[in-house]
Image (cartoon, rainbow, N blue to C red; front, side):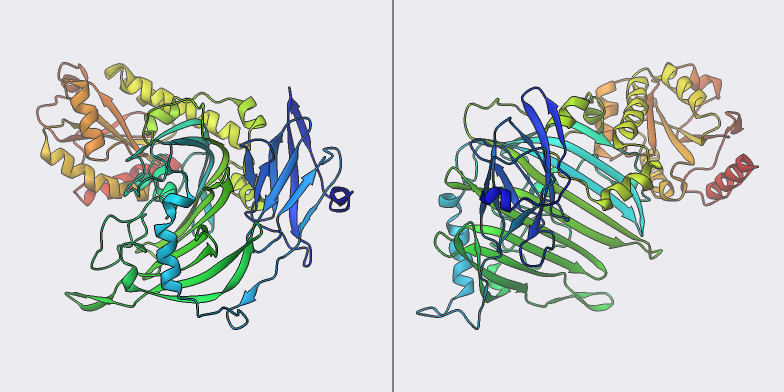
Length: 552
């Protein structure tokens, strides 16, 4: 009866696949009727679960008969049984009493620094120190100013081989990662050439329980994904803000801030990066329930949020979020959002595997499985994500966009291994689509590598208009691939073919020395067989002329 009273008007959809059904719901504050975001929703009797999104919405893969348990900081935990899947429903959570610090009465004053220190020291007792696997749903999107340019979704398995037995300094040091499913759009952002293929390591390191800087440092580095809160605790101020609850437990709310500092530079003293945040720590066992950390440096910011929930007597991260923005010299702003949502925890009898963060080549070889996406726990999209898909593909579904992306990238990867034949294919494929700047190089050619660094900057101005095609004369494939990785040449915008030193392509263009560049117009015709190098400012003028001619 209680469950029925809690169920009101809401669209509840079901999609059956064998014994599994996908149900969707929304969680609201019982008093204000506002959405409750990032609530932990567990399927009782299983290790599966999901989270609510910013709109309080969720989708969950369930069996024929099921019960769910919903927990959220600041609300009373609720168990809903025999939830009918054919009703339109809303689930309401009752807010728990929150006490401001002025109203909290203790036998003695709360020492916030001491509480935080106890929480770090209690990590081995509160978090699983034995091997376990977590399955996550991954979502990552970016935009330049107001225009979205990339969306990636994936399922990621993480095997923590030592659990939380010891703090790590980089993701992948003591755990294994694998991406089992992937779908994504094309990357249309202006910073695409600097994007990593997938940012699993970065978002994993938002978990301050598992990752901290290795030692105390003189000042905070804005560019690290790690927190220095534990190792540099004496450089922070802490304040007790009050009490709230989580899952029936009292929770301290503690704010912190890095003390202001500055660095002497050639132009005088410059303010150091700043860091502020809030920690939510249980009063009985000193477990982290939620952490928020925001770093500032000039106009750039990055905000990391971590949520934890209990399972079988230990706490695990169930939602990790990182939002950031950076301003370029031309005053455009690049925004990014990366998150991991735990969908399953496996503490025993799980399949072991080995792997690190996959490369672009690894990702494009993952076969797309539409049934998998229809029957597993995906973080429910919001109108925001729907807007992103419209920006990226004119309404084309993400599944379709990924199919097109995968086909194109697979052709590039496969044909790159075919050398001369692959280049011939790519030149023909580029007709009517883009101008080609073709560069001959080898791993031993230092001037060639210097030219590529400038070419990377040109990508920003000519992305999706000019193909930077690099023909390697390396005879050894392993050497060629090692150089691509070492000098970060595997970025979007560079297309690689290893033709070797016996190819007919070189003699056809009277190649006698490298670096050497060719310009090919949109019609596929040779425009300049001795084109300017990327370090020559005149090259930009020639590219502009070719692009303008192609529009006429």
